[in-house]
Image 1 (cartoon, helix red, strand yellow):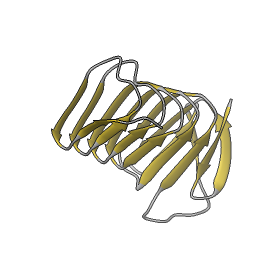
Image 2: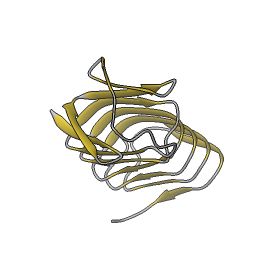
Image 3: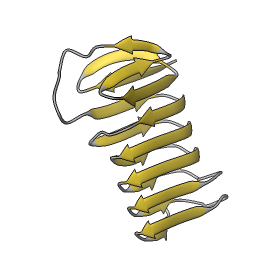
Length: 128
């Protein structure tokens, strides 16, 4: 189980979904106290799936299987298997093992084992 922080309020789970301004952790709707228009998500630990229609940024301190966002920057301290991001930068400190697709944003990672595609952005292999 991972600790998931949404605008400072903590929840525990393995899967997070934000859809139509409703937040779900492991399939159950949660209601953060903060109804801010800017949503910041921080996850501590390995997480399976993150699906978000929009947020300001997602920070994952660990590995992740799948991240899917319509908008928002994604930062992952570990490795990732699949990342789909319509608008925002992607920074992965570890390896990318699967597919990464972003329409508008840069992709920066350590090793690229899978495919990376961006329509408008740079792909940068970095050594961290």
